[in-house]
Length: 295
Ligand code: ASP
Image (tube, rainbow, N blue to C red; front, side, top):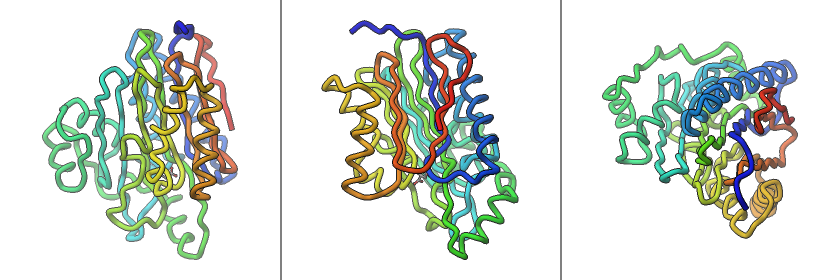
């Protein structure tokens, strides 16, 4: 099958229940994320640049659980996970449980570009960020009032969650990329690293298959290597929507956990599935520059 689609950018804003006052803010954030990334793709930019740009836009938006606005861990601190992968050559970079980094996806991309270790955590990630000129922000710069209040209410049993961000893209040359960024699960144990930092689990991209970004219960996503498993279903010619549904369906049967996934196959056809009440997504494809929204 010849590639018959133009560039595509497809993003998600996390699986779970979205607080009613956040729904419109998240829709608007996702629209601007795809619009920003689309500008790069339309100008001939590569898929990696597009997914980094989309995720960065969402990290800067306090309506999402990534970068500024991320949820707090058990100790009331923000620890961030992110990863990015380039389908051209399987280059990948990730960071886990980092503090005081406003754009974790950019740090993950720097790890990828350095071409050494794929995943950096802790003090090593901090030193690497300094070495490549990515500055730390103040301890409270990423903490929003909403997340501070939510942290307090979570101790009383309110387990509302969602807001991880992710993007998949295909560029004019047919190369794919994926990226994911999150504050993880509210009240998580300090040092806990979820699927969003793990290649094959929360994020995967391979020009021979496609690209995927996941969200939801990270422990279940890790156990089933959800991003890579979903893309492997494409190998047998499965339709991308079917591949996404099958991957989420199998995870549901095996673990009962709550997750969502977006993906693209190598022809630029999109797939999306979730077993949660909501997962707001936006897409620009086929040179139609009006973002399409999926709830
Ligand atoms: N998958 C993320 C994690 O477990 C959380 C989420 O997507 O809501 O860290």
